[in-house]
Amino acid sequence: MLKLTRRNLLGSALVTGAAACSANSPSKTGIPGPFRGRVVEVYHPGSILAGQYQRAAVRDTMRKGMMELTGAPTWQEAWRFFFQPGDVVGVKLNPVGRPAVISAPEVFLEIVEGLKAAGVQPRDIVAYDRYKAEFLGAGFDKWLPEGVRWTFGTDRPDPFQLDMAGYDESQYVELPLLMPKADVNDRHYRRSYLSKFISRDVNKLVNLCVLKHHQSAGITLALKNMSHGLVNNVARSHNDPVNNSCGSFIPAIVDHAIIRQKAVLHITDAIKAAYHGGPLPSCAKYTWEPKTMFFSTDPVAMDRVGLEMLDAQRVKVGRQPIALATADGDSHFIRMQPEHIEIAGTLGLGESDLKKIDRRQFKLA
Image (cartoon, rainbow, N blue to C red):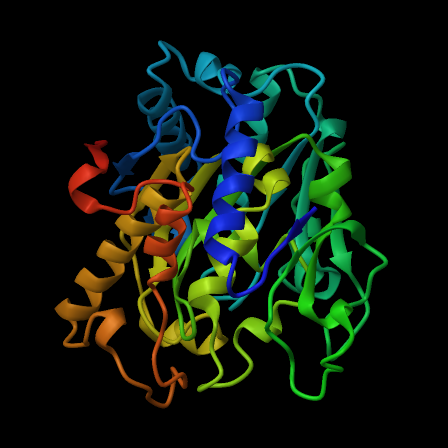
């Protein structure tokens, strides 16, 4: 159980992170994983055509990325590096901002093939997102392979996001951040509880991200897909355009020992991406097609590379980089907080310095 206050945020997170890494060593699992600072980037010009993902090209991209990340001689061995028979593996999807930039079936299905090649049974693969309505609204349930299960954190509307049916009362992160009108004397409102999905149901997690701008966090990629998907009571991190705490909230959540231990692989779908207007549907006006995927065990390094790609596209179309951008009609927060990436680095969650990131780029025909 992790309890944080403003004063001991950094110290507690470092202690908890160290314990998680120590518990994993010399295991292959956990954040930042065996390949700290390594990000494999694979570009395939045929991965999307006329706006449609191309399964064969996605397959080639995935297999190349996994082999280059692990150094394995085959794509099957690459998946066996992380997974083995008996594992129960969760896959965190992303339905927010639909329909423009969300998790694609072509990518998910290749993850399933990789897990099966490692000996994981379909019944031991669990697709997940926090909200049942979001999961169904994105149509994820319609393309899950036979035998693969799916679950969610909650299906109940709650203004404080504290419905506990799908959450673990024994595992939480406590921060002095509150929703408006919350009872300041009730510690329940200061806590974000881990979903039972991550604390009890699975022993390993594949974090499937999409490359997308986010008006409060700046970027929603590997770190935010976990921080705002694996716990409840997250709206308190970005109450309104002024009351924004994503910079500290995101790394504090990901630093929880259970998340650090179980999140073993991060895959970013940047085949189609959004450089502005996220995570709302308005991001549809700002999409482009990088035709790229990222692979890493280090979510901080992955996010730092993703931020670099988003900023390059923003500058290309005449916009300010995310850290300097101001509010407009499709991004209402007065200042975004991409510094959550660097703060996560200080907590030992990965490498945030571009000069120290081992960025390996490949282009397929």
